[in-house]
Amino acid sequence: METKVIRRQKIQYRIRKKVNGSAQKPRLSVFRSNADTYCQLIDDVNGVTLASASTRDKDIQAQKVTKTEKSKMVGEAIARKASELGLKEVVFDRGGRLYHGRIKAVADGAREGGLDF
Image (cartoon, rainbow, N blue to C red; front, top):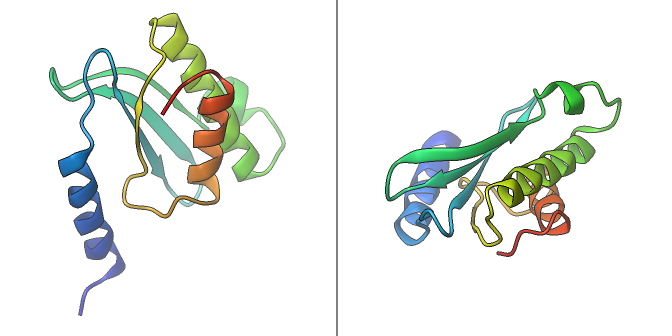
């Protein structure tokens, strides 16, 4: 019998086979723990993280709102950092999780911030 963790890992590997980031179009990887949401812009060709944002950032952590609303702020923050790097397009990587709730909130925030994917 498969555990939830193993099942999600298989989904992650399947997604990672298709989704690759480059310097011009990095991968927007989203990780969600029970308490926080993290996202990174990753250049898979060179294996470097270009920018990152999370709900642990001081300005986002200070807000007294729900976790979903904080996740949307994380998306807006990563979009702001991407525009500073001169990036407009990214490839979205939901990290093996379903596209709803906090994962969708990050994507919506990033789109509102000006990222295309």
